[in-house]
Structure formats: structure tokens, C-alpha cells
Length: 239
Image (cartoon, rainbow, N blue to C red):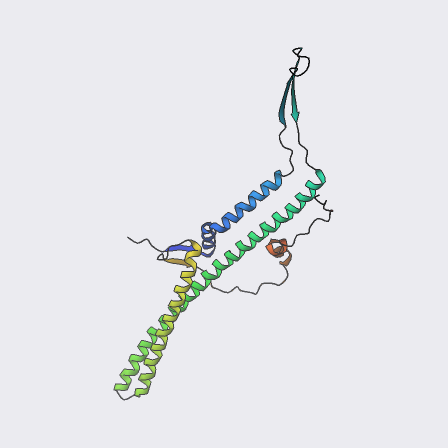
């Protein structure tokens, strides 16, 4: 028995698409791993326990022996480590911003596909209603033609309009299927699964104000973050 269609709203479709996108998930994990490595980079290694033993077998052979125990701690070169860590921090920030940008593009692609899918569905429904109304008009004109109240040209025109409307219905349905095929792989759906997306296509009551939220929006966008300021501290040459 075939399962019913998948019902989602736009944000639910975005969340499902992000969960099904393995590439974005892998990229996000790599960025998190890089952040963890950056956090622990430059920390001192655990001290090592060293042992040493020597005997007087090559000397006077007086039976003397020596046994030493020591703790060894390795210290990195501070200046080079600081410069390398600053550069690595910039690289991690760039990688994180790039992953955020790819995620934003993916989310926008899912949202646009959902809107286009719903628009094509509603357009097909409107054309079907017009085609049904035209069938009634064609029947009325044909009856009037039999009574001599309308010409055969009027009948032919009504039938031609009906064919044009049915062609528009087929075109809108093909467009709906195209966007459905676009959405299925984005959401991790099978090729034969049906999808119903709840989309609000109503226009806002007023146009949004320009510039009032620009600083906050720019702060959340990844593109400005992809241009970080490289630290001005001199980088020690590695000899």
C-alpha cells in the first residue's frame, strides 16, 4: 500500500532538506573539528617520564652503577606558534563563513522551489476552473447556434478557447511536476513520493522599510564574515 503524500510547510521543508544534505553536514563537522584543533593548538604536551641507567663495566669494574629518573617537558617556540595560530584562526573563520554561505544558498533554493511548486499548483487549479466555465459557455453557444441565435463561428471560438485553456492546464501541471522533481532530491524523498507544501502566497500589507534593519542583517550574513581582518602582527619567517 502506497504511503500518503508528505505534508510540510516551507520551514519544515528547509529543516528536512538540511537534515538530508550529507555534504553540508560533513562540511559542518570538519569546521567543528578545525575549531577544536585550533582550541588545543599550542597547549603544552603532557610531560614525559625518562629513565637512564649506566654501569661501570667499561671502567675500573668496581661494581658502581647509576640509575636516573627525569620528567621531560617540551616547550614550543612562542612567537612562531602565536603567528601560526593567528593565521589558522583566520582560515577557520573563512571555512565556517563559506559553509554558512553554502547553507544559506541551499535554504534559499528550497524556499524558492516550494514557492514555485505552490504557485504552479494554484495556477493549474485556476486554469481548470476556467476550462470548466468555458465548457458551460461552449454548450450554451452551441445550443444557441442550433436555435439560430449564434453563428457557427461563435461555437468554434468557444471550443478553441477550451482547447487553449486545457493546454494551459497541462503546461502548469508540467511546471508543477518540474518543481516537484527539483524538490524531491533536496528533501531526500524518493522519485515516486508525493509532496504537499503549505505556502502562504499572500502579499504583505505594506512594503518593508529600507535600511532600518540593514546593520543587523549584514551582521548575520556570511559574506561580510568571509572578509576577516588578518592580524597585523609580524609573522616570523620559518628558517
